[in-house]
Image 1 (cartoon, helix red, strand yellow):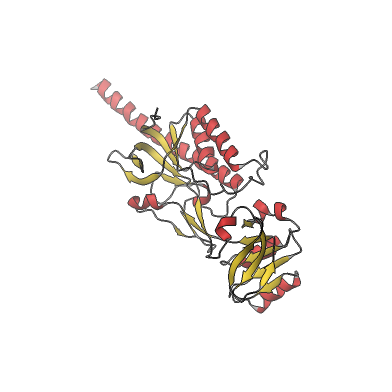
Image 2: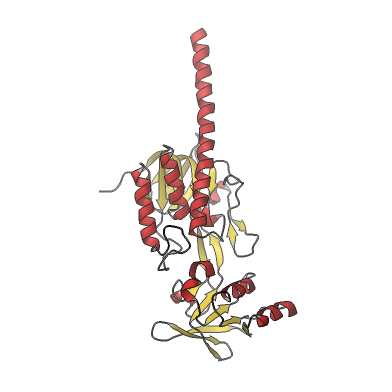
Length: 324
């Protein structure tokens, strides 16, 4: 039987990752009617475990999300699998959230927690090994790759910082500059920390027996490596908001784009909020969950304000009617 979830809600949460589920949990506990619409494509799906999350260190990503969905449902929230295609403004001040399956919900507020898509450079083998022995965040994966031979492939403005960070976990780090122009100071900083620099483009990863064994340059050299670290361009999943005139902007870090929000978590479109990686590309799972909880509290406060204004209007109308 198909679950019946179409209808009116206080809040429609688009995206069922850590930010969206934690927001929905807060809202459901605040006795708000809430539905989470999740496409089922979590960014961290290739990873074996979530790290750096207090009380849940090492939990598989799928297990963490399943626990979160159960918790939301336990307080009366709905979590459904649905891909959102568009969000539009209704005539009554509510939003209409339309899905690819032809179904829709109406909501007083929308919270966007759809996260990011990681765009990798076009190097053979990178995508296939992503989340396994191709990693990007030392705080997420550094302990697991400690003391191994790490190759850092330059891809964006944070490449040097990434190489310096991974040096904290391994004494054997090689930086593949891919044509990146290094200043004298930058070169000195890498060499001073015993980070070898390999110039020129990277052609492919060398894979043997289902593991990385090296990085092959365009010049034909193969540098033995066990692990590859590479930054991605992080693209916000927010195309469905175009009908509201809301589009992602370049993030100040230069690492991708994001949805800007104010200090409360509301976007430039009143009533549309955002939290997690879609607005903060650097947020880890714990940060994203906390951002979802914070945005939910602020959003609920906004609804309380609206509820109060509506109640006052009804109270005044009743008073006038009683004296009329």
